[in-house]
Length: 160
Length: 173
Image (tube, rainbow over all chains, first blue to last red; front, side, top):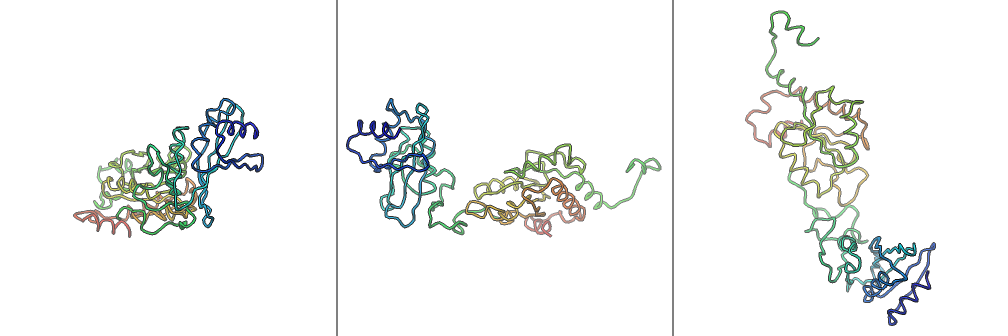
């Protein structure tokens, strides 16, 4: 399956860099963040691959690494019964990545959740609002520098 | 049995108005089931035939706060939800009482993290804190009995011509 995916990607997009890794029989491909929409379009629309199910979009905060965040896409191909992980690094100084909600509509809410929890902006997203936290909340709770108990006074309580 | 036996004779009894008021108040506490998460399942069990809250006169769970005396906050209250809980509490007519059912409501419980209010007494006057995660149905009945005892100790004048803020102080005693 790995060969098919790489062949199809190379055939459609010859100029992109793709790194692969495998862990516990799960294939991961690492792409550059500028290529993410093109790669996702191929993965979804190619007749051999057909990754039509976007299971989840999430992110990792590496805290002290140079590229601080990794955005992770979990995809599933019903045709091949194969699960694929796509990763793209995002740095804190340029904390944005293009949206894939034009490819999979279900990515819309997943990306809103990542925006809410990690503060990564998704360019061209149709409706980038917070998912869980109140709209006026200023922090991003799943970042490693956010204290578990929150920042006192940042969430309003009703008057007693 | 109760009253009927006494009424067979001359048809009157003597009591204090305060006692009669408190007795009637405590014998028909109408709960507002503020079921937010898993504790609500135990609250439903209390409403069912096995534990049967009707034995204590509280079977009328009203889903409009305007008809309720007792709010059973059953479940984890997040900061976002706290405004809703408070709004519903404010709609209940005085006098009113609150049970904080379970560990989450009383202290945040196992959710010691940023979105969960660490105890609803930060924004509500709580009368009974109920231990357990979730509490057994018997435990909720025990809380109701304690609320009834508390209501039984009230006097009519406790609620007369008092501003709301003072009323809350009385209820918290």
